[in-house]
Amino acid sequence: MLTSKVAKRYAQGLLNFTQESGQTDAVFGEMGDIVKTIEKSKELQNFFGSPIIDVKKKVSIALEIFKDFSPVTKSLLQLIIKHGRESQMQNIAQEFINKVEDMKGVQRITLTSATELSSENISNILKSTNLVNHDNQFDVKSIINPDLLGGYILRVGDQQIDHSVKSKLNKLKKEFQLN
Image (cartoon, rainbow, N blue to C red; front, side, top):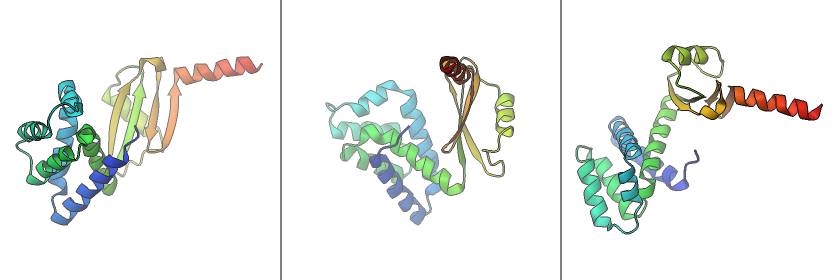
């Protein structure tokens, strides 16, 4: 997923501020909560995306939902909403998480499969490739895509291994068309 310039700029500004004030870890956890909360609630996504709802109402609702958060995060939420960027709130929070994980050397891995994989299968797939640096921490995101028919697609950073049945069938189809 491409991240907007807006999300990158807000996330970088927040990262710079939290590093100077020593609050990066606390805000990191809160950004994770923001991503999960917005991701799980279609109503909240629609609320923040609505141009009809007044800014003051959006600010008061956001501060009520995230009332237990630090003053830094509350101030960021107010700033985002007052500048009309509330539709980017989830992206900003996710980009902040990505920047902190990059700073800590955490690898982001995406594993797409046709069906849900057990943790043992995921572990075996990760061990079978040299793309994953097992000395570092990594964050595995599992995606289920039945269109793959079987197998998996492993993406680590900008590198990808495609062991899906769908891609193998497509290769066979191309070979038959050439012959």
